[in-house]
Length: 208
Ligand code: URA
Image 1 (cartoon, protein in one colour):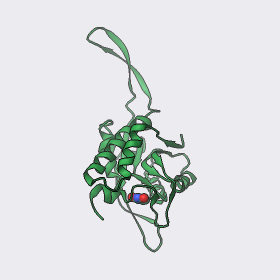
Image 2 (cartoon, helix red, strand yellow; image 1 turned 180 degrees about the vertical axis):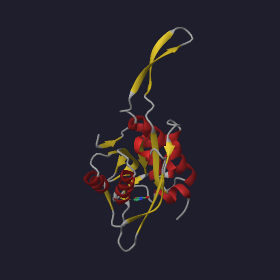
Image 3 (spheres, protein in one colour; image 1 turned 30 degrees about the horizontal axis):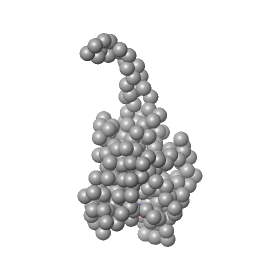
Image 4 (spheres, rainbow, N blue to C red; image 1 turned 90 degrees about the vertical axis):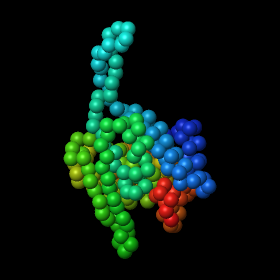
Protein backbone atom coordinates (compact mmCIF):
# COMPACT_ATOMS: atom_id res chain seq x y z
CA UNK A 1 0.00 0.00 0.00
CA UNK A 2 1.08 3.62 -0.41
CA UNK A 3 4.31 3.86 -2.35
CA UNK A 4 5.55 0.66 -4.01
CA UNK A 5 8.94 0.72 -5.70
CA UNK A 6 9.22 -2.46 -7.69
CA UNK A 7 12.76 -3.74 -7.26
CA UNK A 8 13.81 -6.44 -9.71
CA UNK A 9 17.11 -6.96 -11.57
CA UNK A 10 15.39 -7.33 -14.96
CA UNK A 11 13.38 -4.14 -14.45
CA UNK A 12 16.47 -2.27 -13.27
CA UNK A 13 18.38 -3.42 -16.36
CA UNK A 14 15.58 -2.30 -18.64
CA UNK A 15 15.30 1.09 -16.90
CA UNK A 16 19.01 1.59 -17.64
CA UNK A 17 18.20 1.20 -21.35
CA UNK A 18 15.51 3.90 -21.10
CA UNK A 19 17.88 6.27 -19.32
CA UNK A 20 20.55 5.96 -22.02
CA UNK A 21 20.49 8.90 -24.45
CA UNK A 22 21.71 6.57 -27.21
CA UNK A 23 18.66 4.28 -27.05
CA UNK A 24 16.66 4.52 -30.28
CA UNK A 25 12.96 5.47 -30.39
CA UNK A 26 12.14 1.95 -31.51
CA UNK A 27 13.97 0.28 -28.61
CA UNK A 28 12.69 2.85 -26.11
CA UNK A 29 9.09 2.11 -27.09
CA UNK A 30 9.69 -1.64 -26.90
CA UNK A 31 11.34 -1.45 -23.46
CA UNK A 32 8.60 0.82 -22.03
CA UNK A 33 6.13 -1.89 -23.03
CA UNK A 34 8.25 -4.65 -21.52
CA UNK A 35 8.69 -2.88 -18.17
CA UNK A 36 4.95 -2.14 -18.06
CA UNK A 37 4.26 -5.85 -18.56
CA UNK A 38 6.70 -6.83 -15.82
CA UNK A 39 5.20 -4.32 -13.38
CA UNK A 40 1.79 -6.00 -13.66
CA UNK A 41 3.16 -8.85 -11.54
CA UNK A 42 3.39 -6.53 -8.52
CA UNK A 43 0.46 -4.27 -9.33
CA UNK A 44 -1.91 -7.24 -9.28
CA UNK A 45 -0.48 -8.88 -6.16
CA UNK A 46 -3.62 -8.02 -4.14
CA UNK A 47 -6.06 -9.35 -6.76
CA UNK A 48 -8.54 -11.84 -5.32
CA UNK A 49 -8.84 -15.45 -6.44
CA UNK A 50 -11.86 -17.72 -6.41
CA UNK A 51 -12.11 -21.49 -6.41
CA UNK A 52 -13.32 -23.44 -9.46
CA UNK A 53 -13.61 -27.13 -10.12
CA UNK A 54 -12.19 -28.12 -13.49
CA UNK A 55 -11.28 -31.27 -15.32
CA UNK A 56 -7.62 -31.84 -16.18
CA UNK A 57 -6.78 -34.56 -18.75
CA UNK A 58 -6.21 -36.81 -15.70
CA UNK A 59 -8.78 -35.92 -13.05
CA UNK A 60 -11.17 -33.39 -11.62
CA UNK A 61 -9.43 -30.78 -9.44
CA UNK A 62 -9.90 -27.52 -7.59
CA UNK A 63 -8.11 -24.52 -9.09
CA UNK A 64 -7.81 -20.83 -8.23
CA UNK A 65 -8.80 -18.32 -10.88
CA UNK A 66 -8.88 -14.53 -10.81
CA UNK A 67 -12.17 -13.29 -9.38
CA UNK A 68 -12.83 -11.48 -12.63
CA UNK A 69 -12.70 -7.99 -11.17
CA UNK A 70 -13.24 -5.43 -13.87
CA UNK A 71 -10.24 -3.31 -14.76
CA UNK A 72 -9.66 -0.08 -16.64
CA UNK A 73 -6.28 1.13 -17.85
CA UNK A 74 -6.26 4.91 -18.17
CA UNK A 75 -3.21 6.41 -19.88
CA UNK A 76 -2.52 10.11 -19.45
CA UNK A 77 -1.92 11.41 -22.99
CA UNK A 78 0.36 11.17 -24.61
CA UNK A 79 3.26 9.34 -22.95
CA UNK A 80 0.92 7.04 -21.00
CA UNK A 81 -0.07 5.42 -24.31
CA UNK A 82 3.34 3.74 -24.40
CA UNK A 83 2.45 1.62 -21.36
CA UNK A 84 -0.98 0.39 -22.43
CA UNK A 85 -0.10 -2.52 -24.72
CA UNK A 86 2.41 -3.93 -22.23
CA UNK A 87 -0.28 -4.10 -19.54
CA UNK A 88 -2.93 -5.39 -21.94
CA UNK A 89 -0.62 -8.23 -22.98
CA UNK A 90 -1.20 -9.84 -19.57
CA UNK A 91 -4.57 -8.29 -18.66
CA UNK A 92 -6.27 -8.48 -22.07
CA UNK A 93 -9.85 -8.00 -20.85
CA UNK A 94 -9.18 -4.58 -19.33
CA UNK A 95 -11.00 -1.65 -20.91
CA UNK A 96 -9.01 1.47 -21.81
CA UNK A 97 -9.98 5.07 -21.04
CA UNK A 98 -7.98 8.18 -21.92
CA UNK A 99 -7.23 11.49 -20.22
CA UNK A 100 -5.61 14.41 -22.04
CA UNK A 101 -4.25 17.32 -20.00
CA UNK A 102 -2.15 20.34 -20.88
CA UNK A 103 -0.59 22.94 -18.63
CA UNK A 104 -1.96 26.49 -18.86
CA UNK A 105 1.15 28.66 -19.29
CA UNK A 106 -0.26 31.50 -17.16
CA UNK A 107 -1.92 29.67 -14.27
CA UNK A 108 0.30 26.52 -14.54
CA UNK A 109 -2.88 24.55 -13.86
CA UNK A 110 -3.56 21.25 -15.64
CA UNK A 111 -6.45 21.75 -18.08
CA UNK A 112 -8.45 18.79 -19.40
CA UNK A 113 -8.72 18.65 -23.20
CA UNK A 114 -9.87 15.06 -23.60
CA UNK A 115 -11.50 12.44 -21.41
CA UNK A 116 -13.23 9.26 -22.50
CA UNK A 117 -13.93 6.31 -20.23
CA UNK A 118 -15.71 2.96 -20.19
CA UNK A 119 -19.34 3.63 -19.13
CA UNK A 120 -18.97 1.52 -15.95
CA UNK A 121 -15.74 3.21 -14.86
CA UNK A 122 -16.96 3.67 -11.27
CA UNK A 123 -17.17 -0.11 -10.82
CA UNK A 124 -13.69 -0.79 -12.18
CA UNK A 125 -10.27 -0.98 -10.57
CA UNK A 126 -8.31 1.69 -12.38
CA UNK A 127 -4.66 1.64 -13.39
CA UNK A 128 -3.76 5.24 -14.20
CA UNK A 129 -0.58 5.11 -16.27
CA UNK A 130 2.06 7.71 -17.13
CA UNK A 131 5.78 6.92 -17.50
CA UNK A 132 6.90 9.88 -15.36
CA UNK A 133 5.71 11.07 -11.95
CA UNK A 134 7.39 14.50 -11.92
CA UNK A 135 5.64 17.40 -10.10
CA UNK A 136 2.60 15.21 -9.56
CA UNK A 137 0.30 17.98 -10.86
CA UNK A 138 -0.88 15.98 -13.87
CA UNK A 139 -1.42 12.83 -11.84
CA UNK A 140 -3.40 14.77 -9.22
CA UNK A 141 -5.58 16.41 -11.89
CA UNK A 142 -6.15 13.02 -13.58
CA UNK A 143 -7.15 11.42 -10.27
CA UNK A 144 -9.53 14.36 -9.62
CA UNK A 145 -11.17 13.68 -13.00
CA UNK A 146 -11.47 9.94 -12.30
CA UNK A 147 -13.00 10.59 -8.87
CA UNK A 148 -15.54 12.97 -10.43
CA UNK A 149 -16.56 10.04 -12.64
CA UNK A 150 -17.19 7.99 -9.48
CA UNK A 151 -13.94 6.00 -9.41
CA UNK A 152 -13.05 4.68 -5.96
CA UNK A 153 -10.23 2.22 -6.69
CA UNK A 154 -7.25 3.86 -8.37
CA UNK A 155 -3.60 2.82 -8.63
CA UNK A 156 -1.10 5.06 -10.35
CA UNK A 157 1.58 3.24 -12.31
CA UNK A 158 4.69 5.12 -13.47
CA UNK A 159 8.11 3.99 -14.61
CA UNK A 160 10.18 6.74 -12.99
CA UNK A 161 9.19 9.04 -10.14
CA UNK A 162 10.82 11.53 -7.80
CA UNK A 163 10.18 12.40 -4.13
CA UNK A 164 8.47 15.70 -5.01
CA UNK A 165 5.83 13.99 -7.18
CA UNK A 166 5.24 11.15 -4.74
CA UNK A 167 4.74 13.59 -1.86
CA UNK A 168 2.37 15.78 -3.87
CA UNK A 169 0.13 12.84 -4.83
CA UNK A 170 0.24 11.39 -1.32
CA UNK A 171 -0.84 14.71 0.17
CA UNK A 172 -3.86 15.19 -2.08
CA UNK A 173 -4.90 11.58 -2.70
CA UNK A 174 -3.47 9.53 0.20
CA UNK A 175 -5.56 6.44 -0.59
CA UNK A 176 -4.14 6.07 -4.11
CA UNK A 177 -1.37 3.47 -4.29
CA UNK A 178 1.67 4.51 -6.33
CA UNK A 179 3.77 1.96 -8.25
CA UNK A 180 7.18 2.95 -9.61
CA UNK A 181 9.96 1.01 -11.31
CA UNK A 182 12.47 3.62 -10.07
CA UNK A 183 12.46 6.47 -7.55
CA UNK A 184 14.97 9.08 -8.73
CA UNK A 185 16.80 11.79 -6.85
CA UNK A 186 14.88 14.98 -7.57
CA UNK A 187 13.08 17.32 -9.92
CA UNK A 188 15.18 20.01 -11.63
CA UNK A 189 14.21 23.67 -12.18
CA UNK A 190 12.70 22.78 -15.57
CA UNK A 191 10.43 20.12 -14.14
CA UNK A 192 12.52 17.17 -15.37
CA UNK A 193 13.33 14.20 -13.19
CA UNK A 194 17.04 13.79 -12.37
CA UNK A 195 18.72 11.58 -13.53
CA UNK A 196 15.48 10.54 -15.29
CA UNK A 197 15.24 9.65 -18.93
CA UNK A 198 14.33 12.97 -20.56
CA UNK A 199 10.93 13.68 -22.09
CA UNK A 200 9.18 10.32 -22.15
CA UNK A 201 6.66 11.40 -24.81
CA UNK A 202 9.36 12.68 -27.17
CA UNK A 203 11.46 9.57 -26.67
CA UNK A 204 8.48 7.27 -27.26
CA UNK A 205 7.25 8.98 -30.38
CA UNK A 206 10.49 10.38 -31.84
CA UNK A 207 9.44 14.02 -31.52
CA UNK A 208 11.37 16.95 -30.09
N1 URA B 1 7.92 14.40 -18.00
C1 URA B 1 8.87 13.72 -18.69
O1 URA B 1 8.60 13.20 -19.76
N2 URA B 1 10.11 13.66 -18.18
C2 URA B 1 10.46 14.22 -16.99
O2 URA B 1 11.60 14.10 -16.57
C3 URA B 1 9.45 14.92 -16.29
C4 URA B 1 8.20 15.00 -16.81
